[in-house]
Image 1 (cartoon, helix red, strand yellow):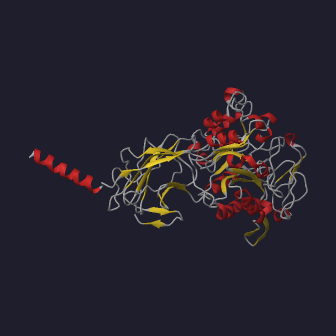
Image 2 (cartoon, rainbow, N blue to C red; image 1 turned 90 degrees about the horizontal axis):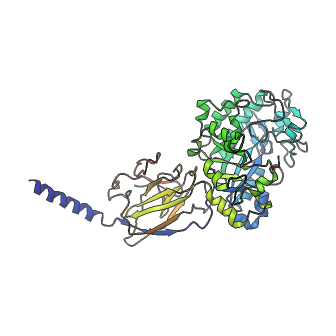
Length: 508
């Protein structure tokens, strides 16, 4: 009886093997020869234009933007917009194969606005509050002659009901229009000087020259509900309880905001280097926040040396860019003045950019007649924070690479395709937040001799093995999915800044 069972079992095993004889591993050899999108060293548009030899060493450009530059008026309960100057900036950045990081600011010490009719023009330190609000008799701004030595600064009237309504509605309208726009990689937001959650040098007066903590909480919660495709971030200075309600508030800390550090790598950035206020802020806003939202920022302007020498392979103040980036899981950093130093060669900027953020290696590839399975490992220092998909023969995996943590790997199934017995279809990584025709490069070193990985489908579109999306080594978020795939168009299938209203950051 036992003997018969063994024979029967062998027969079943033979039938299964015969049924999936077409399952096979595929050779795949790739090197990463171009910079991945949405990561790395960041320049202002004017710097990016000027540095012709560094075009391919960066993928991002940053600009402050002005609400008043795109707002004409208000009709009934709707804001009247003119996005033409903003569109021009985005198109300019995209023309270089780069994507934008944008931050709409209200206060900017010393800045003078020109070529923006919805703004107060040619007044040093003017706010970017739209003129239609300033025309209201109930609206009154305050002024500081030289806060912190940064120059004349006007402050928005945060008691004004129209401004409070506008600030939320503006982001509602902005997200509705631009959340899915591939020209924009990241959005930064905030209050105070440069939107960085402080007005150092001016006496803080909530509800007058700074938004109240209650309104800030309301605004951040609102912002969290708006963006589905574009990650949004706030300054690490939001950890300062003197200004904000964020640190220690479990509800606000639970929002999916990323962080930007506007004085990265300065002399006493880390606790081990001195005061360590920056590191304390990162800590207080969540040491694991990088797992779900981006870490970024700007190299310090505390001294001229900081920006110009942070790419020194020997380090700045005893810390290399690579060490600092890994510690804080940085996806990007603004290093606009690096070309004015001696270390920003084409090779070094590319190397530094490449080190930041995510990086993918395909560690397994198998196909049969109706499906493909691709195993991907993140060998970078941070996740990808945008949706991107393993794509074979124009069809995408259902599951996104978004959120795959460093050192983790997952297997992705591509269904609804036909593959010939001797065919080895190309693998690409595509996404709707990439610029037109752009893909995400990856490395691979597969000779096709390895055992077939799990993730293929059988003739009935049933998962073979443990499931369509095999989770590896505890990587959460990659779970078994439905037998459905998405093509490149998203359809289900079977089975220094631009001239005018935008300004470069100044030494401060």
